[in-house]
Length: 111
Image (cartoon, rainbow, N blue to C red; front, side):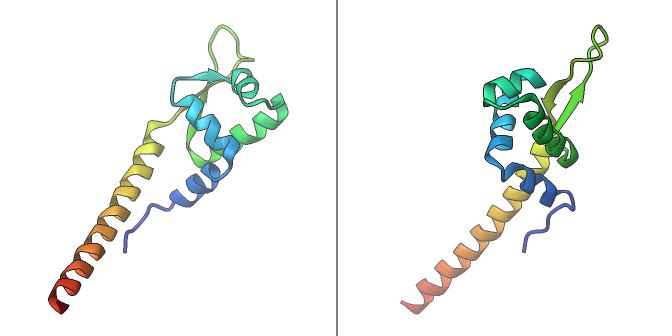
């Protein structure tokens, strides 16, 4: 069976929420301020803040504070987390491809 990194479960749990999945989709187009994410999602700033904390803890996003205004936080998607998820999915796909090839050989032998 496919193996997975220890940090995959929190990543998948974070993505299971439709709002957070939407935030990741928005960030896939480029970095955004927290306020922009809240507005685009139709959420209050405190509600968006909770979602962003989950995404930060899961390692899906990173935040930066521009030197000119420390009150502003800009969030960006962490490509490393997406690469880890993709690698796991590729491993899972390879496992199922092997299983299906094996099943096909079995069926063909029975004919």
